[in-house]
Length: 449
Ligand code: NDP
Image (cartoon, rainbow, N blue to C red; front, side, top):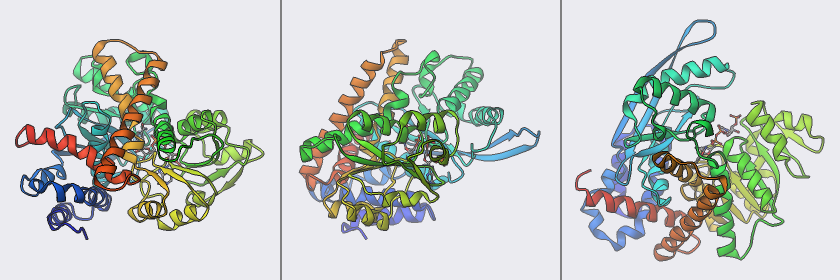
């Protein structure tokens, strides 16, 4: 239950309007809870209705995605796009291909994206999309046909000034390339700014592939330095996942002087007391698209455990969950705390459930919430859109320096909101209030939007 009666009423309406959508309920509850101190000081927000509009997506699209498999049989998946909020810019957010994708997952991701994009300081609204299509085990040709069919419906709803998708779980440069190619054929127009995460040869930005993982480490470094006078140097790190975000977080954490001792995929985790060799991991997971157990087959110092949740039993100073939502529950959080974890920073979206987040905050663990800590990816997507508009390409160093600056300003912005409305260490409240302030101001300024 929320303490504030008005906010509880808003939440009750969300429950009634969106039955059974547990991930969406969870994301909304966390944000409304954070807004309590803000509402108590700004009672006009109980009467102006903006919070009720804020939790209701502007538009939700659900569509059929038929495609032909290699045996010539028709398969059918379901496609989604939520265009959640366009108050501060065109809808912007990734596309996820994973069997767990449904309306609830897409709405939670879209809602979080609105706040995240607001924090980046760039003019981007929030959206998210995806499909319950499972890319695992599909041939290159099947992936291409699926992406083309997905875009055959989506293209009429997006545009550089309307809605700009990107990648997420199961969608990397390969899938973005196929979707962009199909958009170009249908629109008969080369519009680079219609999708981000593109290949470098056709309008992508240097540094976009690395941006979420690198940005996560820049944010965490800022937390460590400003809140504890500390750094990554000499720390032991555990990272869940081994996809785009996880692998680049591993690379940057190592560059900053830490040792990453464990990583996972949905099948299990590997532990390497000598430190994960990121080049081997990249080759296995990003190039060969093999299972993580291959790492233990090829690196003699590593061992494999076939249960990905057990990764949180590995002792570490810093935990970076970079796989998926709700991967750390209260039990895993308590195990990490008992083992002396000092920092948890979220690379994935909502990887810690509410009980886990509270356990970390109560135990005095530095906690970096996803909408701030993993905002580097969409920030560089914003920079990709800028380069596309200017018809210019910046160097890797320019993009990386820009990313570093953005992650620092996100930290400063949310920690000052945390100090003003809660406690300095409560970056969850800080991120939710700081993100909400900008969007709600724009919504009110534009009238009924
Ligand atoms: P990838 O598809 O590249 O990698 C996902 C990784 O997570 C894989 O190792 C995958 O293992 C693992 N995983 C997926 N589902 C589960 C599950 N149910 N249980 C355990 N492990 C799982 O995705 P990304 O790295 O791009 O995304 C990871 C997270 O980061 C997501 O939450 C995403 O929303 C978030 N994010 C991504 C951004 C980006 O720029 N890519 C930007 C901001 C946030 P397996 O190979 O076995 O499936």
